[in-house]
Length: 425
Image (cartoon, rainbow, N blue to C red; front, side, top):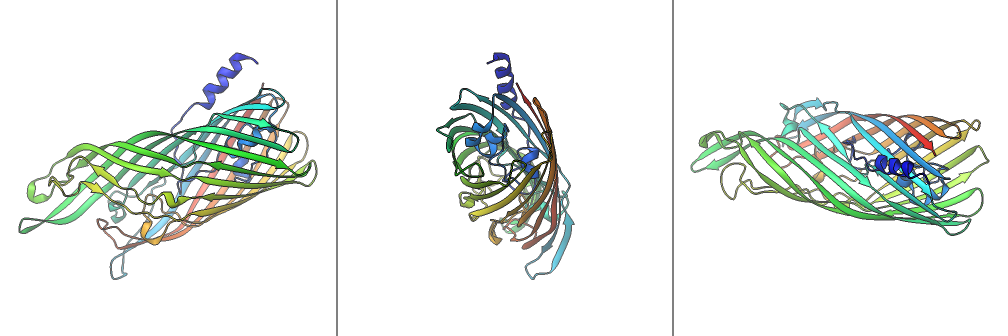
């Protein structure tokens, strides 16, 4: 093996760019081909992105391969806010804040039985923004979760039917939350008004693991399963509160530390691949994500935001998301040895209950429609894809410090564009 190529491949795969996904925590856009097939891409031939979609399928890679992918996501949506009597008090839309999902992959065939692969890609990420002067901003006017998973992987091919893989996951999370703090509270015999802005910003690293297996019934039919473990982050963050003290006490800023725990869910992927002939194949994929691990986002402060010990020293937020399924179907057709077309559709359940929704992730049921094309020769592969995600609507309750009692997010969608480049050595 050329050591320079290995060093270059490892460096590319270990890059951890700033990543911000749109309309939900879960990111499935790991390559242009994967986007084009709705995420149903567990059994691709000679594709380094198999490290992300199905580690057991890196045994389908011949030789040494590197790949990079860039996916652009642009979220759009509207909302309405209501008071306790059900009267509409505000309508608006999100600030379009596009994000990028970037993937880097390297796979090397060691011998006829063993493969090594490594990838850097986002499994969880999100970004949302609303007008700072809106009532929605009392819940969240800017939220961002940057996420990158680095996954060194070992795969073994036992025979013509069975292959399996196991890998580690080094998961990075960078979290930033901003909101307006508007509330009234008793100070002595009077009612004080608090009108300020808070910002929480921090990062964390944590470890997880994954395992996968493929079984080929014959030359045309194959099944596979992938398990990814849950990952628990203990987040330490900087706290900034601007003009957060009550007006009766005089305005003031608060700077301190914040602490919280977030558990990213474990998941199962189950896939089926059918080859109609040498040119056309169909993939089916079902993903079970145990979102029930996201039961709360409670943040604790080492200083009181309102300057009164024992008051506003935490920001409790119950979530109680439910476990959910994502279903995808993808079709790939090769017109020749060099040109191919792909299409896909995905249906993603919403796991957010009425009492657990917020403007951080105002995401309903998602339907994604996508198409793509690929060119390849003996050394290089270039693929492009376009997608449109119908995010649907979501109703959720306001929290105690929000300037509304209930919210309705609607007419939400995300535009998707992706490009990938792969090179064989």
